[in-house]
Each structure stands twice: as structure tokens, then as C-alpha cells.
Length: 510
Image 1 (tube, rainbow, N blue to C red):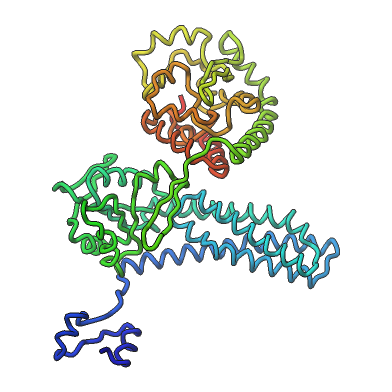
Image 2: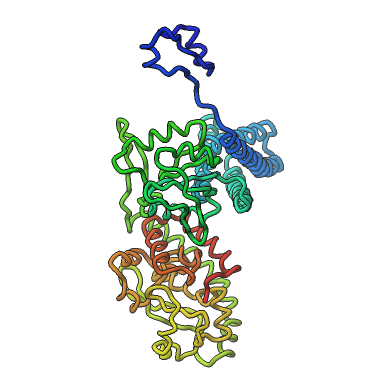
């Protein structure tokens, strides 16, 4: 029986030695009981996490204070009572900061995609203003109108800008090898190579791979994207290998067959050594945000929501398309005379080029673009097929002789695609979506590729902001299919923003 004194010693984390004269007790309990202590590597990880969160605390507070302070000054100028204004401003600042912390937006800023972070910031902002509005209604106060009209949009905009700036800074630091998790990837070779490929291509994710442990094979290293990663240890010494490498994150790409307790046992062994154990599943590449996790009597369940291709979200997407297209066509109409003059002066023929494309559910429509090729381009296509540099069923040439001089400039900066906003306005296309295919491409599709036609094609999309013509056919299809199943309005807005940057710094456009 453990004495009261020993219990207090155990709670303080002090080592307790069992009496040598009680062999039965020694068999039931280890000779020493002490909670795992953090290693130097783990402490370093926690230190830079705290530093970055402190940066977010300061920038959040500064942006909120600025937005609320300006609103308060406007209220005072309009004759609002000083005490009520100061009280409401202070309460809003406190609520706003509390909601940002309570919804874990700063945790999301470290290791989750930017969309998740921005969505969390918007959600926390809504909760803060909602709570203040309820309080004002219960206390019969006045003055919420100006807060909603000024503080809400300006504060949310400033918060998004500051979070974006901090994320950009963090990405730069991670590119230099700082503020990243030292990562060990464990699993079968095929799964390990898949995970390493995905993690190594995204520095912003913060995974710096320092080694891998294979459950099969005896390789000394694996090579992914021309980078070599050492193969260290084996399935029985994963925790020790992580400690020797100074790894603070272990990614399990696959577990040994027949060992259902592997992950739980490994998590125990890593206590005090690593900060997190990440379980990778190829299911996430298909389901993405449609995944949800829950436990039922200790049974971990992963729910995958079946995607829907109609309903309220698609109505919102259509409304966004109409607004964006309507606004975009105004400046396009202004620059149209200049572009038309340049196109006509460079080569004879019409200003616009109409081409039949395949839209949602296989419906054909006429897509409009500024003409960037000679008028006999379609007739010359058969002669150029042997020089095709495109991926899969696509036809692409970096130095296509059919492209005019002005056309090369239009294509480089995607200006030839601006008239497609008319297709968006009349409902043939969406602003964001899969690339609109040609009928001859669709006839060569394999079974699963037809899923690209479940939603409207887009002017821009994941294909356009991820490398365009430089991508392989399989990668292009994977990006489009993932978008079709997992799109969201917030993700569409992010792709639009990334498209603007790609137009200024074009890559893979020819």
C-alpha cells in the first residue's frame, strides 16, 4: 500500500523508491515513478511556439484597438456620452480578444492551412459582436450601429491583414529552417514516399523532415524530388530514433500490419520527447474538410460527409459569381479598346475568339477569349501534334508558332481570359472551378476524371494557381477533383487572391 507521504511525493513529480522487501509490490509497480520531463528539443519547440503566439497577441490587440478606437472617436464627435462609449469600446476589445483566444485561432495559425485560420478569425469576430449586441439589447443601450458599420468591417479587415502578414513572415522563416517541426516519418516505403512528397513541397506547413523509418525494406535512404532522406532505426526503436534526431513531430504514414496498439504504444514512448504524433491518411486527400472526428465509447470514428452538388452553398457561389463578374466587366470594358487595337494591329482577324467547351453535366457552351493566335490556328493543330508538350489529353507548346506577338503577352498575364467573365455572368462558367475542357479532351477521359464536370468550370482554379501547364496530367486531375468535392466560398476567395498574385508573377503560362 502506498503511504500518504509517497502519494504527495508522486504528485510533486519526485522519484519514489519502493522498499526492497516487498517483491510483490515491485512486480505490480515500477521501481521509480516519475512523470516524463520535456527534453531540450521539446522545450525549444514550445519556446518558438510561445514567441509566435505572443506576436499574434500583440498584433491582434493592436489591430482591434485601432479599429475600435477610431470608431469610438467618431462616436464622440457625433455627441455620444463619453462613459458609455469608453465602456462599450473596452468591452468590445476584451470580448474580441477573448474570442480569438477561446476559439484557438492562434493555434490554427501555427500548423493549419491559412483558410482555417482566417475562417476562425471571422468566426471569433462574429461571436464577439454577437455577444456585445445581446448585451446592448438586454441593457437597452444604444450605439451598436456605428460599431457594426465601422468597427466590424475595419477591424476584421485589419485582423486578416495582420494575420496574413504574420503568416508570410512565418513562411519566410520556415524557408530558412526556423519555426519548423523537426519531423520523422514512419511507415511502409510507398506511404512514406507519398507523405514526404506532400510535406516537402509545402514549406509553409512547417514540417522539416530530418529522417524516415521504414517498416519494410533495408534501404539506407529514400530520394523524393531529388532530395535524399536518411532511413534510420526500425519499428521497435521509433521513439529512440526520434530522440537521437531531435525530432519533435512524428508522422505515422502507416502502421505495422497486425499491431493495433502500435500508435498508442508509440505515443506513450514519445511522452516528453515529441510535441505531437501525426497520423497520415490518404483518405484526407479525397475528403479534406468533409472529415470530422469523434469517439464512441473509446472507438475513434472518422466521418466523411458525402459531397452535394446543389443546394444553398451553390446558390451562394452563384451570387458571388454574379457580383465578381459584374464588377470585373467594368474595368474590362475600359481597357477593351486598347487591347482590341493591339490585337487587330498585330494580326488580321477578329478581336474575340470563340471556342466550344464542355461545361457542367457535359453541356456544351461557347467560351469567349481575346484572340491570341492566328486565325488558322485550328487548321494547323494536326501538324503540331507530334510536338505536343502538354500533360495527358492537353495540347500545349511553350513556343507555339500559332501564337501572335501580342498573344504571348496576353497569355503570359492571363489577359486573354478576361472576356470569360461574360461567360460567368450568363451562367456558363464560374469564377473559380476546374479548367473548362475541350470536347475532344472529354472523349479521352477515364472514368473518375468525368467528376470534373459535376460543377461549372472556372476562369481560375487550383490548376491555375499551382503551376498551370507545368503540372503533370495526374496532378492537374487530382487538384481539380479535390476542388470539386471540397470547395467553399472562403476557399474560392483565397484562390481569387492567389490568382491576382499569379497574374503579376506568372508561372507555367504559355
